[in-house]
Image (cartoon, rainbow over all chains, first blue to last red; front, side):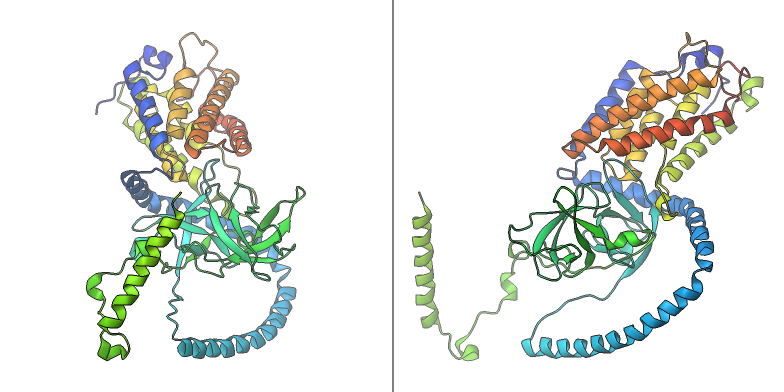
Length: 326
Length: 171
């Protein structure tokens, strides 16, 4: 590539926008805008997005390091004068915590016994993947973070992301070494939640403010200011019971949530790889895996006894279908 | 910088242009909220593009402007094409022209930049609303635009030297 020194004409004319090239770029932009919406995004564009983020992640990490260091200077000096009081408070809290720890251990043992008794297959994962926030792009269209861990460390789309205080969001794009986290405050965020106290259900909807709103709250739902809000797990994406925040009624009578995660900057987070429960149609049983019941094993089911039952069932289905027909 | 004056190919400037654009994108995406306080971040990529398109238009052809906008879309996680379209159209409309004889002063340059920011913000808002399927939040965009306009003279003063060159910039 050969550069020539700029002539006076070059500088005076500014950037040369040829009609064909400019029109092409504008058309490409419009096509991208139309086809890159989250609901219709083709896999190829998703792959491009995650690949680009993967490539720039090391650079973003490099840029974030000095800022991370600077961010800790202020709080460090401010806290020096408060350390003695903080130590005393922590000592008190530790004494209280010992009681709760013993209680938690006893309850854990009890729960294990109950699970064994009921033969429950509980796949609650205790694994977590720690990651630094690499980029915190603030934009009017999306509120997300890029974190420095990806598929190589077992992270997948949909995994919940928490900081020390509570749920921050969920993974929406996974690269090999980086992931994008959609925050609870983003316009596209929808999380089914319950109030800890009453199990009142609602949907937490992001609205690009610091206080996402609670929607689809039942008419007679028992919800109060200060109720602890946690994930309900109804969507099958996030597990149940992740702490989100406390309910608060705003001036317009709309329920909102003060997020726990806002108590600290979202600089270091944990991703909890989560085994999702799939609906039956997404997780069909393969015929080869099923062993046909034999009369000898069950002791009750025989070919003769099954056949009439199947026939009756078929009749029931047929009559129901006919009844539903207009 | 002197390379362009004495006729040598300005490879150094080209590298500096690339580095400054990459830096502006990295800083724009950097986790500003980690430092306790606000999260005011001007559109540094737009400032960088505008300055380079005035200093050395040859380094800033439309497809480079498009790529920078696209990278901003990708890094911020927004819909692809929004800032790419906004930057290309805004800089096409408000490009430096021969008839502007007052471009040595920072005032007219700043005034032109305000126009670029206003057009880019308006187009991005329209395109973003189309992409997200509803009106995008206007307030954060206006705050970002205001921060960008206010930040420009600080960066401009480092690069602009009055009457030192016909482009209005000190390079």
